[in-house]
Amino acid sequence: MAFLQWVEGLSLSVWIREGGSIWGYPTILFLHTVGLGLLAGLSVATDLRILGVASALPLTPFEKFYPLMWIGFWVNAISGVVLLMADATTKAINPVFYIKMGFTVVAVIMLIALRRRFFHNPMLDRSPVSSQGKAIAVMSLICWIGAITAGRLMAYIGPVAGLPGESNHL
Image (cartoon, rainbow, N blue to C red):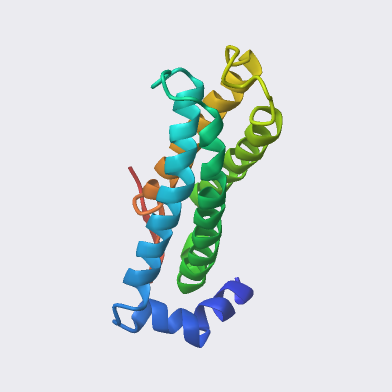
C-alpha cells in the first residue's frame, strides 16, 4: 500500500486527479475511450465478420485494421497507466480491476492468434472460415465484452476513491 500511496502522491497523479484542468483527467479519460474504440471496436468488427456478419465483404482487407488496433492498444495502455496512477490506492485493490485486465490480456492474445493463424492463409477469401478461426473470434468477443463490462463496473463495485474504508456494492 505504501508504494500505491507514493504513486498516487506523485505530482503528475495529483495534477490529473485534482488539477481541474480539461487537459488532466477529462482528456486522459477521453484518450482511454478513443483507444478502446480503436482496439476493441475494430477487433469486434473483425470478429463479427469472421463469424459471418456482412459475409459479402472479403476478409483479407480486415488485416489492414491491425496497425490501427495497435495504435489503440498503446493509447489505451498509456492512458490506463496514467489513470491508474491518479487513483492507485483505490483501483489497484479492486478485484474488478484484475478481472478487467485478465479479459484484456486474453483478448489481445486472441487478436495476435487470429492474425498469425488466420490472416496468413492465402485461401482466406476463397474458402470457408475454419472452426479454429471462429472459436478465436468468439473468445475474442467474450473477452472484449468482459473487459468493457468490468471496466464500467469498477465505478460501482469496490472501494470508493477518496473515501478510505468505503465500498460500493451492487
